[in-house]
Each structure stands twice: as C-alpha cells, then as structure tokens.
Length: 212
Image (cartoon, rainbow, N blue to C red):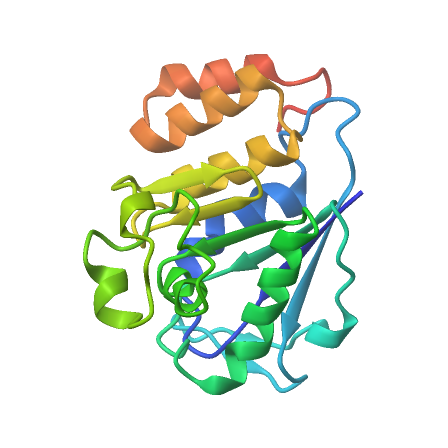
C-alpha cells in the first residue's frame, strides 16, 4: 500500500494538487490489482490552514507522525508562504524521504524550498522557469541539472512548474504504477487536449466495471 502525505500550508495553491489527488483518492481509473492508496494531509501543527482558493483544511497528522518507507510519497504543493521558517521541518523530512528511497513530488514554490537546502543541486529537476531558483534560493547550485519542462521525473524526485500540474500528476501516477499504460496515456491526452476521442479511449482502457 502507498501512503501519500500531502503537506498543507497557508496559501496552498489548490489547483496544483487537483489532478493527482482526485485520481489517487478516488481510484476511479486504477487497473486491476493496483496497490491500495491512502492519502493523509500533514501539517506542522493541527491548526487549520486556508488555501489560496479559500478552502479550510485541518491536517490529518503531524510531521512527526509520518512513516518513511519506500512506499511513502510526499506531495509538496506551491504556496506563497514557503519562506516561513516553520516549514523547514517538512523539507528536512523530504531529504529523509529521498535518502531512504521514498518519493518526493514538489511543484512551484515547493521546488524553491528544496533548492534552499541543496536537494536539487545534483539531480535533474525543473521549476518556474530558468533563473527562478537563482532568484529565490540564494544557495542554489543546480543550474546544470535544470530542465526547462513543465515537469521532470528523476527516479524518486518529481518536480514541476506552476503550469505543470497535469504532467506532474501523470508522472506521479506512472511512478506508483496504479494505472494501466493505455489508461494513463489516454487520461493524459484527454485532459491535455479535451478531444473526445481520448475520453472514449480512456473508457475503453478500463477494467470491466470501472467505467463511470
């Protein structure tokens, strides 16, 4: 079973998590025999946070409650509050995740938080355009590993720009192996283009009984 920890913080960018959380939580397009997935929101305290869209989220657990194993996944969304020192604990936990083979997925401003402690200095990654990390993360030394794409997967590290949420979701789902290959390609093509043919291909790729 995969345990997906979603770090929540004030001004969280709701839309960046939309695709991946909806699919992992619902399991509506999972292949037969896919591993179970458990999603948990995690905070630096149990105090409610308010997202950029105005939603209130009460964390399910604290950082100290997280269990780090190879089947653990940490999602770090964008937010305008990553500079707050209180979030240093989750970035240290992200370092632990990467070291132990667990998966870390960071998007938008969360990539800058990883860059601040050198976690992007020696691995392929992306962020909000060339020069962004240099501007917001003074200690960043990973320029030669920067790839100017919406989302970049490098083993157990998946990073994305603020415009890369869909590809980021695809790469996370692919990493977990919970969709069939045809289902994943059709899902991505449909949400990327909106073309009906991809919707029908998606439906036809599903195990019998999953269509809804």
